[in-house]
Image (cartoon, rainbow, N blue to C red):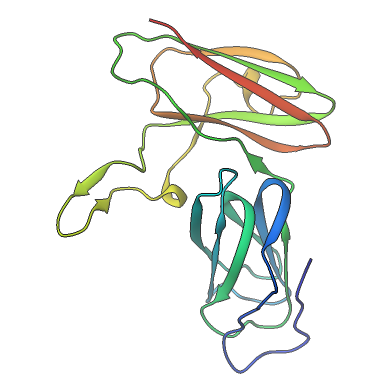
Length: 199
């Protein structure tokens, strides 16, 4: 569940384990520093909800939590770039992201209808992006990607009815984004979101 250090260490800390830490659902990872760790980074490695490998670098915080931008179903390692100031606790965040929905940007005027259905108590936000982590800027000698999954910029939907929302709602896109998702901000319930694209 957590590894805490009661004093400063002489070097980077590598935490080993006998297996893989597995979340109940794919969630963001929370790294809480007891002191000022803003000068170091934490490299998280694991897998997403589909079992595909993902990794990102999170900058440490000053006596608060630093949170990943990707949601992990499993975490295989978290490595520090240098010694931490005092204690560090690693856990799962209450925030979780859905699988990304790839929309068809080739179809002319392809309308997209959205419905988010809430069950129980949940606070959610629909987001979209025009940044494609599959876009290659240089094919040779090895592919260079313009964006990584962790560097994609997500923008809240322009309709306030689906931003920090707590009730079932519908919305649409006047344009077609490349990717869309729903973020579960908090709550003990769930939100099921459907993106329907027509031609």
